[in-house]
Length: 497
Picture 1 (cartoon, rainbow, N blue to C red):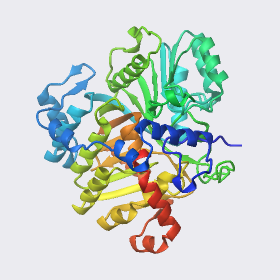
Picture 2: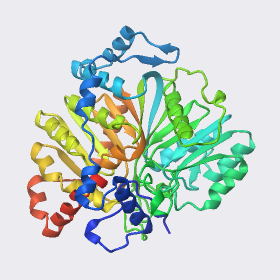
Picture 3: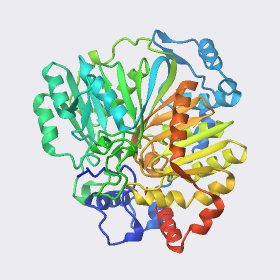
């Protein structure tokens, strides 16, 4: 029997009032409402409004100048500008991109770094192989931070399959320090003995925002740690959309594996994207881990061996962006809005939970109307049904503007990627929804350069091959009354999704 994945989007559908979708879904909906502190839906939507990015963009672009951090320290402003302008092609050095990078520099919270090696990882098999290799080869330290941590099966460098807990216990016995942050809600189905075993072996554990059934103590329970981070020896990092979830143990589409999960009714195959990074950017990921660790009251850790001297591993330019509800406005959200407004030729977006804010809808429509090739790859079926209904409620206005929309078939799409103008890419944990903007702690990597953009575009094109293109005219004709009603109710709940 397949494992039921924990959704990281909304988990409640108002069209099914009184029907218990699951204990986790009811709890999630309750936490949403408590977080906004209201009793009526209209009031809750108003209380949970997404801040406007315009002011942040205007203030950020005024005086900042991107400075790139290399393995040997910061480059001079002139050298930084020359490096960006020297990238192949015309769009990279354009005034539009330069303007956006000023915004990103001011709002991103971390520097652009160069001398990085970046590898795009497709789906669970490649991601689990990269994680298995990093754990196997770790010699001093391992930091893990995940929304969902289960005792998954990983692939080791010798091709063998081993359980995550077994590998971590073995590393602890070898003297490797292991520190783990897991989200209490996202990992609620993980047997407690998994964490108990790791703790007894010497791992330091931090339960992010423990779920408390007492209504008086759940005001902050809506804020979740949605990040997916592994850092080995301070030199190798894997981040992206892939949780340490057994859902990713399914085989690739087209195999002899089950076509549908009998427990959920969803496709058995999960499509996702992560990246493996070596170089100076890893220190920025490590800093985010320790910021979370300290802010959440984790046990004291001597950080001496966690930040080795950076080494030049490649030529990729990377900025790591950590977003949190503690910020006045999500750093990644402002960065994404600015990047989309700067798009000149194309913007291809793949996202698991497309529940856009009004500002994101306006930005996508404006880009398409000025001739940008805007494409959305979104799921037909999801572990969060309301997110699909909310997405579909936006299709008509987006299609009218010229946005191309593709719905995946036979897979559960869980990717969170953006590729703009063949040079600006983003891969991480942030969904294209209100929840990632308002409530979740997220991590995303912006990569400047053609190779990563080409890799993401190739994955997008592969997704198009097995997806269905939504046609504007036929879409309106096929929408039944009940489809529109479901979309209407989901649209009302967008501020809480």
